[in-house]
Amino acid sequence: MRKQGILNPELTWAISRLGHTDTFAIGDCGLPLPDGVKVIDLSLVFGVPSFADVARAILNEVVVEAVAIADSTPREIRELLPNVPVRETTHETLKNRLAECRFIVRTGETTPFANAIFRSGVAF
Image 1 (tube, rainbow, N blue to C red):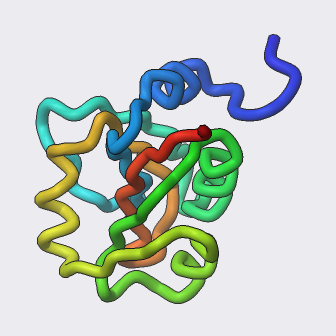
Image 2: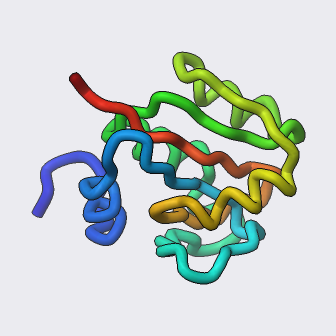
């Protein structure tokens, strides 16, 4: 058993396979999921787990060089990304870009537009 960090084996495996410039998304429970992209569904009930909890856990384990969010993304979500360049786009464009992601993590978040696409960086 792991001592710390993410315990979900599917999520740990997906994170371990990320390379430089690969993208992944974290989304609310209403985000439309494109066919053909691996979905790691962590949702349990409305609000659990939250976008913030999932993002914090993943950001503790992944080097992120950029994030894309919708221009309508709430301030609370933006504040989770203080040291990462953030690119704003429309919600429609963000949804269309999901098809390019290596995986999508579905949370139980119910805040509208609580979605982001992260671009993996390098640790050296």
